[in-house]
Image: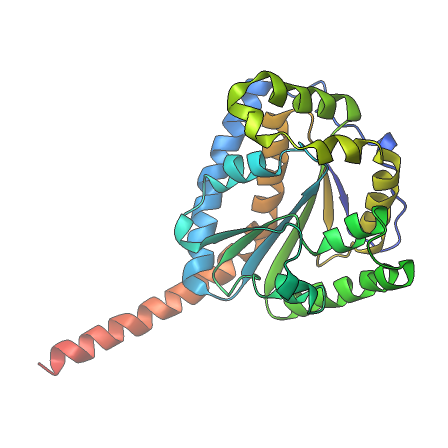
Length: 274
């Protein structure tokens, strides 16, 4: 089960939304479904690349350890790297701070035929900056409207937008943070800031709830993904992505058929001219 919000202003209460998969979901069946979805996703991406009528933007947001990197590995692994870009947005550089907050984001949006994945995104500018009070409230509150307009612009130019909030419980997050200390191969991920952020859990919850409510739309919906279980998290994201691309299959195929006819005619003309 996943929770998709596609209407601005819809109330969201994260505490009422589960972080675990439904009890009737079998792990082995989920794995088989993911493999099937992966094959279809590869084919859909091939059509996207060839037709070049649309682009795809996937936004991954979530608390620390929610699995943004794992989702990229688990889902993007089915894609052809040729047409995929992954951008991780951290603390803005000095140059980025000298521009508007969307400047560094817009530079990485996908061209037609391409699929871009954002590991964190423009939403940090209404999340982190809000909780940590990095800018005045009067400034970050205006950004909801700027974000909606920005995403509307992308949609008008053919971008298919999917936004995922990876919903992890406080208990599961603690387990994952502690595991980094116990496992030498994960020690490099240790960050005292992650533990500090846990002290602001409720503040981040309110910030995420407002983001989900104020920036959802039919063209750029949010999907809240139960993320305590990694295999189910990946399944939900892959399923949503395939379902979003599937309606474009016939249109993309028709465009490719037209291109094929034109290319054959060019080849025939070349042969006759020899």
